[in-house]
Image (cartoon, rainbow, N blue to C red):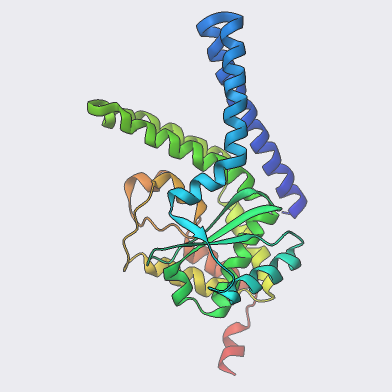
Length: 279
């Protein structure tokens, strides 16, 4: 699918999501207190949507313990991100580091001019230059396609719903059984697995080779066998590869195609790579 169609589709989704939230909360206020209640809830809903839009990415990064990656700490990552962003025709994304040994890569933000890419200490210490280039290109493609524009608020709302179950005390398990499917349904309605295929293909074009990303995806997938990662399962759609393994709750929020299928598609973009490598 062409980038313009992807951008338009994601703008439509986020408009429907946030507009629907305002309408639903206003209708609830009308049910509680007629016109006065609707007015109060309408203003509250607008403030919540504005907060979600402006501070949503920052809230998710803080929840994962991410901090901004200084230029002096990893200049290669900054220079690679700047070059790839120029190729994609967007502003250079801000880079963040998650102080975790698990190799993680994810992106959040409001759009192409306000994107943030977080990489874990484990990934930065293990990735080769071509793998780093591949994953940065993938996340920049998400920003170029405005996937992050819809991913960020949807994931944050899903996280809120999951966390809301914790206030139930003895009713916590019952609330989780009620709210988790609602949050998962919202995620699956708005986030298609095809966005990952589109980002993979765009990343291969930005890098002029698909093999760095293909290698990184395989390495990240294998890392699940050696590292334990804990975070809100509702954040699963943000990562380039799901870090939760076979976790039952996290699997409800999985929007990623199988890694081997993604790798196969990337390799097929350069079918002669094995012969070239042997030569």
